[in-house]
Amino acid sequence: MSQVEDRLAAAGIELPTPRSPVANYVPFVRVGELVHISGQVSHDAAGGVLGIVGVDVDPETANRAARICGINLLAQMKAACDGDLDRVVRVVKLGGFVQAGPDFFAIPQVVNGASDVMVQAFGDAGRHARSAVGVYRLPLNFAVEVDAVVQVR
Image 1 (cartoon, rainbow, N blue to C red):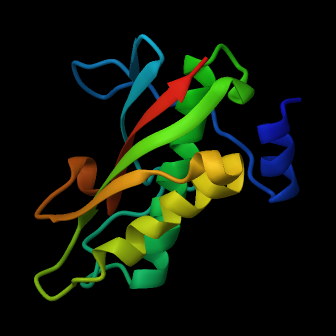
Image 2: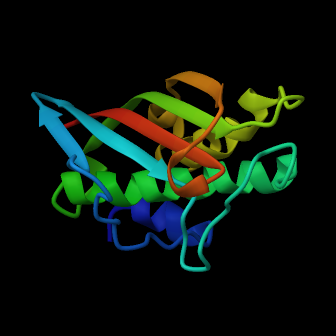
């Protein structure tokens, strides 16, 4: 097992099988040392977190939804690195999208759920630039979606 996976196991995080795209795109594209990972929604084995944050979904659940997105990103990273997460050199950037209600503004705190997973997995190499945006709607009514750019060897 890789060092990254040892850290994840110690934290009780098990990576799912990466989901297949639901439309006309690929899960990731590698250009040189950079891997661009398509947005991962807050879907897990239990069905995930759906709804509008601040209306149907409370902030704590939304943070958990972003964490799920982060775990799904790790699964895609593993696939992009032929099964070896130790090939990830740096998490460069995350883009977080929160399906937010009209009076919900704590978007950055929600997206911290995904950011925290990256730091948990990669330590300082998991610290990244980030966007955190509230949006009107997300695919399939998921509460959160996060995409990533990572440097790999």
